[in-house]
Image (cartoon, rainbow, N blue to C red; front, side, top):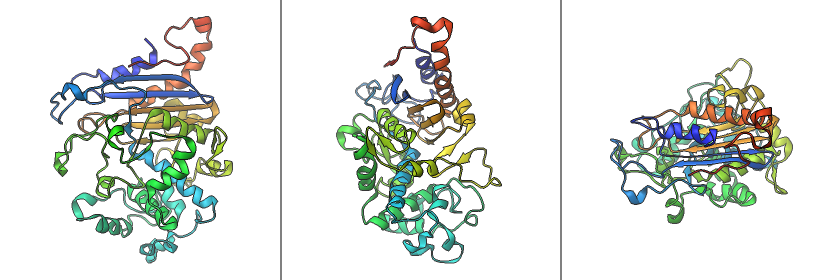
Length: 386
Protein backbone atom coordinates (compact mmCIF):
# COMPACT_ATOMS: atom_id res chain seq x y z
CA UNK A 1 0.00 0.00 0.00
CA UNK A 2 1.37 3.41 -0.92
CA UNK A 3 2.31 5.91 1.75
CA UNK A 4 -0.10 8.45 0.24
CA UNK A 5 -2.99 6.01 0.42
CA UNK A 6 -2.11 5.29 4.05
CA UNK A 7 -2.30 9.03 4.76
CA UNK A 8 -5.75 9.36 3.21
CA UNK A 9 -7.03 6.22 4.91
CA UNK A 10 -5.97 7.65 8.27
CA UNK A 11 -8.55 10.40 7.80
CA UNK A 12 -11.17 7.99 6.57
CA UNK A 13 -10.76 5.69 9.57
CA UNK A 14 -10.39 8.33 12.28
CA UNK A 15 -12.68 6.70 14.85
CA UNK A 16 -16.28 7.66 15.54
CA UNK A 17 -16.03 10.88 13.52
CA UNK A 18 -13.95 10.36 10.35
CA UNK A 19 -12.39 13.45 8.81
CA UNK A 20 -14.27 12.85 5.55
CA UNK A 21 -16.11 10.12 3.69
CA UNK A 22 -14.28 10.64 0.37
CA UNK A 23 -10.86 11.95 -0.64
CA UNK A 24 -8.86 12.25 -3.84
CA UNK A 25 -5.22 13.32 -3.90
CA UNK A 26 -3.38 14.10 -7.13
CA UNK A 27 0.29 15.05 -7.26
CA UNK A 28 1.79 16.29 -10.51
CA UNK A 29 5.53 16.72 -11.09
CA UNK A 30 6.77 18.55 -14.13
CA UNK A 31 3.33 18.38 -15.69
CA UNK A 32 2.89 14.61 -15.31
CA UNK A 33 0.76 12.80 -12.77
CA UNK A 34 3.08 11.13 -10.26
CA UNK A 35 0.55 10.01 -7.65
CA UNK A 36 -3.21 9.64 -7.72
CA UNK A 37 -5.10 8.06 -4.83
CA UNK A 38 -8.82 7.85 -4.14
CA UNK A 39 -10.44 6.52 -0.96
CA UNK A 40 -13.88 6.32 0.59
CA UNK A 41 -17.47 6.75 -0.51
CA UNK A 42 -19.38 9.67 -1.99
CA UNK A 43 -21.86 9.59 0.87
CA UNK A 44 -21.72 7.92 4.26
CA UNK A 45 -24.35 9.67 6.38
CA UNK A 46 -28.00 10.64 6.03
CA UNK A 47 -27.88 13.36 8.68
CA UNK A 48 -25.56 15.14 11.11
CA UNK A 49 -26.35 12.60 13.84
CA UNK A 50 -24.41 9.99 11.88
CA UNK A 51 -27.35 7.93 10.60
CA UNK A 52 -25.93 5.72 7.82
CA UNK A 53 -26.79 6.77 4.28
CA UNK A 54 -28.81 4.41 2.08
CA UNK A 55 -26.56 1.82 0.38
CA UNK A 56 -27.41 3.10 -3.12
CA UNK A 57 -25.85 6.50 -2.33
CA UNK A 58 -22.55 5.08 -1.08
CA UNK A 59 -20.68 4.69 -4.36
CA UNK A 60 -16.89 4.51 -4.07
CA UNK A 61 -14.94 7.68 -4.73
CA UNK A 62 -13.03 7.68 -8.03
CA UNK A 63 -10.93 9.89 -10.27
CA UNK A 64 -14.16 11.28 -11.74
CA UNK A 65 -15.69 12.23 -8.39
CA UNK A 66 -16.82 15.85 -8.37
CA UNK A 67 -16.28 17.91 -5.24
CA UNK A 68 -17.68 21.21 -4.06
CA UNK A 69 -14.51 23.31 -4.46
CA UNK A 70 -15.69 26.05 -2.07
CA UNK A 71 -13.12 28.87 -1.88
CA UNK A 72 -10.99 27.45 -4.70
CA UNK A 73 -13.63 29.37 -6.66
CA UNK A 74 -11.76 32.53 -5.65
CA UNK A 75 -8.80 31.52 -7.83
CA UNK A 76 -11.04 31.17 -10.87
CA UNK A 77 -12.71 34.51 -10.14
CA UNK A 78 -9.27 36.09 -9.81
CA UNK A 79 -8.19 34.62 -13.14
CA UNK A 80 -11.26 36.02 -14.90
CA UNK A 81 -10.59 39.48 -13.48
CA UNK A 82 -6.92 39.35 -14.45
CA UNK A 83 -7.88 38.57 -18.05
CA UNK A 84 -9.95 41.77 -17.96
CA UNK A 85 -6.94 43.65 -16.62
CA UNK A 86 -4.85 42.31 -19.49
CA UNK A 87 -7.49 43.56 -21.94
CA UNK A 88 -7.36 47.04 -20.39
CA UNK A 89 -10.97 46.85 -19.25
CA UNK A 90 -9.99 47.03 -15.57
CA UNK A 91 -7.02 48.38 -13.65
CA UNK A 92 -5.65 46.74 -10.53
CA UNK A 93 -5.30 50.11 -8.82
CA UNK A 94 -8.35 51.78 -10.28
CA UNK A 95 -11.21 52.47 -7.83
CA UNK A 96 -14.03 50.00 -8.41
CA UNK A 97 -16.54 52.82 -7.88
CA UNK A 98 -16.24 53.57 -11.59
CA UNK A 99 -18.19 50.37 -12.17
CA UNK A 100 -19.98 49.92 -8.85
CA UNK A 101 -21.47 53.26 -7.70
CA UNK A 102 -22.14 51.84 -4.22
CA UNK A 103 -18.41 52.32 -3.63
CA UNK A 104 -18.50 56.02 -4.43
CA UNK A 105 -18.79 57.41 -0.90
CA UNK A 106 -16.29 58.04 1.90
CA UNK A 107 -13.36 55.63 2.30
CA UNK A 108 -15.10 53.15 0.02
CA UNK A 109 -14.03 55.36 -2.89
CA UNK A 110 -10.45 54.18 -2.32
CA UNK A 111 -11.18 50.45 -2.73
CA UNK A 112 -9.47 48.97 -5.78
CA UNK A 113 -9.42 45.59 -7.46
CA UNK A 114 -6.03 44.93 -5.87
CA UNK A 115 -7.60 45.47 -2.45
CA UNK A 116 -10.35 42.96 -3.23
CA UNK A 117 -7.96 40.28 -4.46
CA UNK A 118 -5.57 40.66 -1.51
CA UNK A 119 -8.28 40.78 1.20
CA UNK A 120 -7.21 44.30 2.20
CA UNK A 121 -10.37 46.11 1.03
CA UNK A 122 -11.66 46.63 4.56
CA UNK A 123 -14.87 44.73 3.75
CA UNK A 124 -16.15 42.28 6.37
CA UNK A 125 -15.43 38.57 6.31
CA UNK A 126 -19.04 37.44 5.95
CA UNK A 127 -22.67 38.46 5.74
CA UNK A 128 -25.60 36.18 6.53
CA UNK A 129 -27.39 36.89 3.30
CA UNK A 130 -29.66 33.86 3.58
CA UNK A 131 -31.17 34.99 6.89
CA UNK A 132 -31.11 38.78 6.79
CA UNK A 133 -32.35 39.59 3.26
CA UNK A 134 -35.35 38.05 1.45
CA UNK A 135 -34.28 37.70 -2.20
CA UNK A 136 -31.34 37.83 -4.58
CA UNK A 137 -31.83 41.48 -5.49
CA UNK A 138 -31.73 42.63 -1.87
CA UNK A 139 -28.79 40.31 -1.15
CA UNK A 140 -26.76 41.77 -4.00
CA UNK A 141 -27.49 45.26 -2.65
CA UNK A 142 -26.36 44.12 0.80
CA UNK A 143 -23.06 42.86 -0.62
CA UNK A 144 -22.44 46.09 -2.51
CA UNK A 145 -23.31 48.25 0.50
CA UNK A 146 -21.53 46.21 3.18
CA UNK A 147 -19.96 48.58 5.72
CA UNK A 148 -16.19 48.61 6.08
CA UNK A 149 -14.53 47.08 9.14
CA UNK A 150 -11.10 48.57 8.32
CA UNK A 151 -9.82 51.42 6.15
CA UNK A 152 -8.83 50.15 2.69
CA UNK A 153 -5.26 48.84 2.65
CA UNK A 154 -4.85 48.98 6.42
CA UNK A 155 -5.31 45.34 7.42
CA UNK A 156 -5.77 41.78 6.16
CA UNK A 157 -9.33 40.54 6.64
CA UNK A 158 -10.12 37.33 4.75
CA UNK A 159 -13.32 38.44 3.09
CA UNK A 160 -15.80 36.31 1.20
CA UNK A 161 -17.78 39.52 0.82
CA UNK A 162 -14.85 41.06 -1.04
CA UNK A 163 -14.86 38.19 -3.52
CA UNK A 164 -18.62 38.40 -3.96
CA UNK A 165 -18.02 42.03 -4.89
CA UNK A 166 -15.22 40.91 -7.24
CA UNK A 167 -17.59 38.54 -9.03
CA UNK A 168 -20.22 41.26 -9.36
CA UNK A 169 -17.54 43.62 -10.70
CA UNK A 170 -16.61 41.12 -13.44
CA UNK A 171 -20.28 40.84 -14.38
CA UNK A 172 -20.77 44.61 -14.45
CA UNK A 173 -17.71 45.22 -16.62
CA UNK A 174 -18.56 42.54 -19.18
CA UNK A 175 -22.35 42.35 -19.07
CA UNK A 176 -22.04 38.56 -18.72
CA UNK A 177 -22.80 36.26 -15.78
CA UNK A 178 -19.88 34.90 -13.78
CA UNK A 179 -20.51 31.22 -14.72
CA UNK A 180 -20.20 32.15 -18.40
CA UNK A 181 -17.05 34.17 -17.76
CA UNK A 182 -15.40 31.34 -15.86
CA UNK A 183 -16.34 28.85 -18.57
CA UNK A 184 -15.22 30.97 -21.52
CA UNK A 185 -12.07 32.47 -20.02
CA UNK A 186 -10.78 29.59 -17.88
CA UNK A 187 -12.51 26.22 -18.17
CA UNK A 188 -13.03 25.95 -21.92
CA UNK A 189 -9.46 27.02 -22.86
CA UNK A 190 -8.00 24.59 -20.32
CA UNK A 191 -10.33 21.72 -21.21
CA UNK A 192 -11.85 21.57 -17.72
CA UNK A 193 -14.94 19.63 -18.77
CA UNK A 194 -16.04 18.76 -15.22
CA UNK A 195 -15.64 22.20 -13.64
CA UNK A 196 -18.49 24.68 -13.33
CA UNK A 197 -21.24 26.14 -11.21
CA UNK A 198 -24.53 24.35 -10.52
CA UNK A 199 -23.77 20.81 -11.77
CA UNK A 200 -26.37 19.19 -14.00
CA UNK A 201 -28.02 15.97 -12.74
CA UNK A 202 -25.41 13.70 -14.35
CA UNK A 203 -22.53 15.53 -12.69
CA UNK A 204 -24.41 15.87 -9.41
CA UNK A 205 -24.71 12.07 -9.34
CA UNK A 206 -20.89 11.93 -9.30
CA UNK A 207 -20.59 14.51 -6.50
CA UNK A 208 -19.40 13.82 -2.98
CA UNK A 209 -21.98 14.74 -0.36
CA UNK A 210 -21.28 17.69 1.90
CA UNK A 211 -23.37 18.89 4.84
CA UNK A 212 -26.80 18.25 6.30
CA UNK A 213 -28.38 21.72 6.49
CA UNK A 214 -31.93 21.45 7.87
CA UNK A 215 -31.41 24.78 9.67
CA UNK A 216 -32.00 26.57 6.35
CA UNK A 217 -34.50 24.12 4.90
CA UNK A 218 -31.99 21.96 3.04
CA UNK A 219 -31.29 18.29 3.60
CA UNK A 220 -28.07 16.42 2.91
CA UNK A 221 -26.31 18.35 0.15
CA UNK A 222 -24.95 16.59 -2.88
CA UNK A 223 -24.29 18.54 -6.06
CA UNK A 224 -25.72 21.72 -4.54
CA UNK A 225 -23.34 24.40 -3.24
CA UNK A 226 -22.47 24.17 0.44
CA UNK A 227 -21.71 27.87 1.02
CA UNK A 228 -24.91 29.49 2.26
CA UNK A 229 -24.14 32.92 0.80
CA UNK A 230 -23.44 31.52 -2.64
CA UNK A 231 -26.57 29.36 -2.37
CA UNK A 232 -28.67 32.39 -1.45
CA UNK A 233 -27.38 34.14 -4.59
CA UNK A 234 -28.47 31.24 -6.79
CA UNK A 235 -25.34 29.09 -6.44
CA UNK A 236 -23.05 31.41 -8.38
CA UNK A 237 -20.80 33.88 -6.60
CA UNK A 238 -17.21 35.05 -6.73
CA UNK A 239 -16.33 33.46 -3.41
CA UNK A 240 -17.75 29.92 -3.79
CA UNK A 241 -19.92 27.72 -5.96
CA UNK A 242 -17.61 25.88 -8.35
CA UNK A 243 -17.56 22.09 -8.51
CA UNK A 244 -14.81 20.07 -10.14
CA UNK A 245 -12.58 17.01 -10.20
CA UNK A 246 -9.01 16.63 -8.98
CA UNK A 247 -7.76 16.33 -12.56
CA UNK A 248 -9.41 19.62 -13.56
CA UNK A 249 -8.06 21.44 -10.51
CA UNK A 250 -4.57 20.06 -11.24
CA UNK A 251 -4.74 21.35 -14.82
CA UNK A 252 -5.67 24.80 -13.52
CA UNK A 253 -2.72 24.66 -11.10
CA UNK A 254 -0.41 23.49 -13.87
CA UNK A 255 -1.43 26.50 -15.96
CA UNK A 256 -0.30 28.76 -13.13
CA UNK A 257 2.92 26.77 -12.62
CA UNK A 258 3.75 27.19 -16.29
CA UNK A 259 3.22 30.95 -16.21
CA UNK A 260 -0.31 31.12 -17.61
CA UNK A 261 -0.13 28.59 -20.45
CA UNK A 262 -1.05 24.91 -20.77
CA UNK A 263 -0.83 22.64 -23.81
CA UNK A 264 -0.05 25.64 -25.99
CA UNK A 265 -3.13 27.58 -24.86
CA UNK A 266 -2.44 30.83 -23.03
CA UNK A 267 -4.90 31.97 -20.36
CA UNK A 268 -2.75 34.61 -18.66
CA UNK A 269 0.48 36.38 -19.61
CA UNK A 270 3.64 35.36 -17.72
CA UNK A 271 3.94 38.82 -16.17
CA UNK A 272 0.34 38.59 -14.96
CA UNK A 273 1.01 35.26 -13.23
CA UNK A 274 4.19 36.71 -11.73
CA UNK A 275 2.15 39.59 -10.30
CA UNK A 276 -0.58 37.23 -9.13
CA UNK A 277 1.88 35.04 -7.22
CA UNK A 278 4.13 37.68 -5.66
CA UNK A 279 3.63 38.95 -2.11
CA UNK A 280 1.27 41.92 -2.23
CA UNK A 281 1.04 42.65 1.50
CA UNK A 282 2.94 45.50 3.16
CA UNK A 283 5.46 44.18 5.68
CA UNK A 284 3.47 45.77 8.48
CA UNK A 285 0.56 43.42 7.69
CA UNK A 286 1.44 39.93 8.92
CA UNK A 287 -1.41 37.42 9.18
CA UNK A 288 1.06 34.53 9.52
CA UNK A 289 1.52 34.01 5.78
CA UNK A 290 1.82 36.17 2.70
CA UNK A 291 -0.74 36.88 0.00
CA UNK A 292 -0.76 37.51 -3.73
CA UNK A 293 -3.69 38.29 -6.00
CA UNK A 294 -6.20 35.64 -4.95
CA UNK A 295 -3.52 33.17 -3.83
CA UNK A 296 -2.11 32.53 -0.39
CA UNK A 297 1.69 32.26 -0.25
CA UNK A 298 3.89 30.33 2.18
CA UNK A 299 1.26 29.28 4.73
CA UNK A 300 2.85 26.63 6.97
CA UNK A 301 -0.49 25.81 8.61
CA UNK A 302 -1.48 23.68 5.61
CA UNK A 303 1.52 23.76 3.25
CA UNK A 304 3.98 22.28 5.72
CA UNK A 305 7.60 22.51 4.63
CA UNK A 306 6.60 23.67 1.13
CA UNK A 307 5.70 27.03 2.68
CA UNK A 308 9.38 27.86 3.06
CA UNK A 309 9.85 27.56 -0.72
CA UNK A 310 7.16 30.15 -1.36
CA UNK A 311 4.50 27.71 -2.54
CA UNK A 312 1.15 29.28 -3.31
CA UNK A 313 -2.44 28.14 -3.58
CA UNK A 314 -5.72 28.11 -1.70
CA UNK A 315 -7.94 26.00 0.50
CA UNK A 316 -11.69 25.48 0.51
CA UNK A 317 -13.97 25.20 3.55
CA UNK A 318 -15.47 21.93 2.32
CA UNK A 319 -12.03 20.27 2.59
CA UNK A 320 -10.35 21.11 -0.71
CA UNK A 321 -6.93 22.56 -1.53
CA UNK A 322 -4.62 23.40 -4.42
CA UNK A 323 -0.91 23.94 -3.82
CA UNK A 324 1.67 24.94 -6.45
CA UNK A 325 5.43 24.91 -5.81
CA UNK A 326 7.26 26.15 -8.94
CA UNK A 327 10.66 25.51 -7.35
CA UNK A 328 9.88 21.77 -7.40
CA UNK A 329 7.71 21.79 -10.56
CA UNK A 330 5.00 20.52 -8.25
CA UNK A 331 1.20 20.72 -8.16
CA UNK A 332 -0.66 19.12 -5.24
CA UNK A 333 -4.45 18.73 -5.19
CA UNK A 334 -6.37 17.35 -2.23
CA UNK A 335 -10.15 17.18 -2.49
CA UNK A 336 -12.23 15.91 0.42
CA UNK A 337 -15.73 16.37 1.82
CA UNK A 338 -14.65 17.15 5.36
CA UNK A 339 -18.00 18.89 6.11
CA UNK A 340 -19.90 15.61 5.63
CA UNK A 341 -22.17 15.31 7.52
CA UNK A 342 -21.32 18.40 9.61
CA UNK A 343 -18.74 21.17 9.55
CA UNK A 344 -18.30 20.59 13.28
CA UNK A 345 -16.89 17.11 12.80
CA UNK A 346 -13.39 17.69 11.47
CA UNK A 347 -10.39 19.86 10.69
CA UNK A 348 -8.12 18.50 7.96
CA UNK A 349 -5.15 20.88 8.30
CA UNK A 350 -2.98 17.99 9.51
CA UNK A 351 -3.91 15.85 6.49
CA UNK A 352 -3.23 18.77 4.15
CA UNK A 353 0.22 19.27 5.67
CA UNK A 354 0.97 15.57 5.53
CA UNK A 355 0.05 15.34 1.84
CA UNK A 356 2.15 18.44 1.05
CA UNK A 357 5.13 17.03 2.91
CA UNK A 358 4.69 13.65 1.21
CA UNK A 359 4.87 15.49 -2.12
CA UNK A 360 8.02 17.31 -1.01
CA UNK A 361 9.73 14.19 0.34
CA UNK A 362 8.78 11.58 -2.24
CA UNK A 363 11.35 12.48 -4.95
CA UNK A 364 14.15 12.07 -2.40
CA UNK A 365 12.76 8.72 -1.26
CA UNK A 366 12.52 7.46 -4.82
CA UNK A 367 16.12 8.33 -5.63
CA UNK A 368 17.67 7.20 -2.33
CA UNK A 369 19.81 4.01 -2.48
CA UNK A 370 17.07 1.84 -0.98
CA UNK A 371 14.47 3.05 -3.49
CA UNK A 372 16.37 2.68 -6.74
CA UNK A 373 15.42 0.04 -9.28
CA UNK A 374 11.96 -0.43 -7.82
CA UNK A 375 13.20 -0.87 -4.24
CA UNK A 376 10.35 1.17 -2.70
CA UNK A 377 7.09 -0.66 -3.20
CA UNK A 378 3.94 1.39 -3.46
CA UNK A 379 5.60 4.41 -5.07
CA UNK A 380 4.89 3.79 -8.72
CA UNK A 381 4.66 6.67 -11.16
CA UNK A 382 0.91 6.74 -10.77
CA UNK A 383 -0.88 5.04 -7.90
CA UNK A 384 -4.65 4.83 -8.04
CA UNK A 385 -6.56 3.28 -5.17
CA UNK A 386 -10.30 3.17 -4.53
